[in-house]
Image (tube, rainbow, N blue to C red):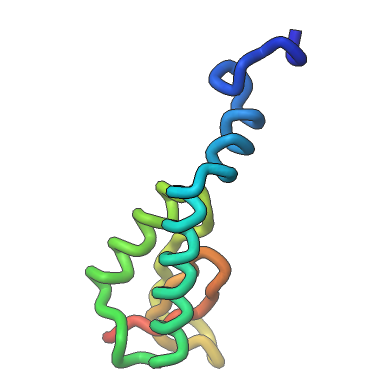
Length: 92
């Protein structure tokens, strides 16, 4: 029965429990702050290697994390989508 299931046997309950854990919330806030600052700083702030580290961290936090090469204008530059931040410029 789902009602008697512990969080470990139900992925939805496990995720809900993990999202309430203080360490996870602190890490998500830190990730959001770093990505927000990188986006505000523009194209001179984030190397591809740094973006890859942030993407891996985002995936560990069960949030969005991906890198795109340039595509059509107005987003004709390498960029990352991490957490709640889109089109974070990456140094060419």
